Image (cartoon, rainbow, N blue to C red; front, side, top):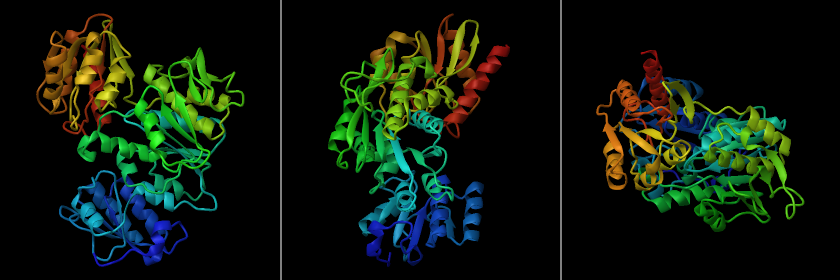
Length: 484
């Protein structure tokens, strides 16, 4: 590292002197590629480094070289920042302990995430409002609901960030958006410093990604960064006191309000359920009345945690001025993405449900509490999580448990401690077709009226490319079972 970052970088925007800058982009996945492409567009000199050297990485690298970037792929390329760079832009997959980031930080070299870069590259003359949300679970569904509400109000919106379009790509779109529905992960928030959302929400906080952050407190602190500098509304979960504490700890702009959402009757300054979805926060007469935003039946599926998601999305939309009718219409037209509490089939009186997106214990608990009795399919990569609290919460609902994946013993141990009477079936092996044996075992354990629920509580990459592939394998195995 021989370069010193210029003084203007701390306040840089799209019109700053980017051609004077040499930037290292770490990673060449979707966000890394978008970051490099955007930096090239504003004239920066870009060098991309990535440990991956598969065909997809090489294809992206070739395109970036055509656009003018220098690209270095393969093992060892991220050991230290390239010489002469003024800024490092990192993908969220790398932890602060990664050699290139730790070296940069120790040497005083600025490290930004793609989200920080996106905030800096907004066009000051026509910047869209950011409505931002995070949480351990429910982010993607909630940001989809929010985007649907915004579109129902006639706004040009897009769901971006940790889902769908990389946020830097959205801000560089030649046709400006009116508003952005932004999903942010804790890893993205860690490297974000100047973002000032119009409104921000934390849906919930439960232990997750401890392998990335190192501790529960560090993980929660990263989530809380979403509230910093918020302008209009900080939305928190009344049933999760930690989210409210994160609001209290945040340094927000003057006039910003704390807005709660609850599955109970809402108090003043809250959204909740009072026969219908009710808003007592964004109405003039909130001391004595509420605005109806729709019914619980408008939320599909209307499991309790998904109703909470809808209320959080509604709070963000209302903070932007979306009328109640657009909230209702947005909920009615929203379609839940695949692998989120999706009913696959009913076979011989047993319902099979795919919630492969439940990749941590908190998500699995929310899913399992929507059904009773349950044959629970769980396991995969635990990411350092513990399952005692989850087992205690759902043990009365369990008919049996079928475990798969590399960390299945972690769940088996929790079951032995807290639910010793529940039948546990472990299916060894990590090849994809193991799912057929898993489904067959679950079917043998189930009785008429039961739900066989894939809610693994774990990540999937020990056996599958992602949670979607895991859900697809489950769906295919259930359908093969139905043909027997």
